[in-house]
Length: 95
Image 1 (tube, rainbow, N blue to C red):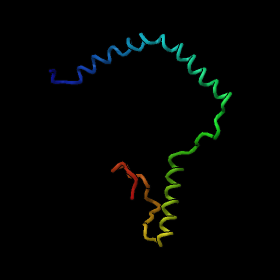
Image 2: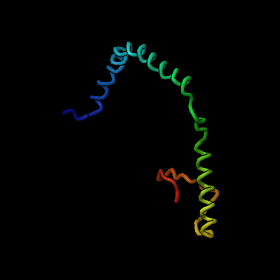
Image 3: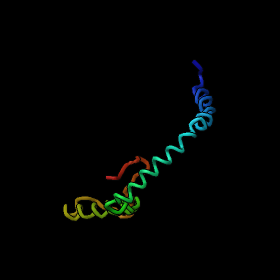
Image 4: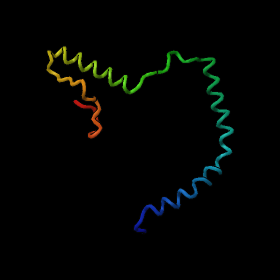
């Protein structure tokens, strides 16, 4: 058993390019399958618009919901406007 386990991964990644080239022939049939799938959108178009929002918009909406809950609770929930909802140190939403 080698002491350095990264040696094994270095050897494995050396052959990834060869592995990928050996399977390049699969791209042509894959293009045909994807083309058929895309043609199905002509017959069955999407029923609704795709989502167009950003993380900032979602966080602002969450802040507004928090303010509404605070107002409904009679100001029992603290709302700090300058403090972001996401806590990067703990990688979670602030309470």
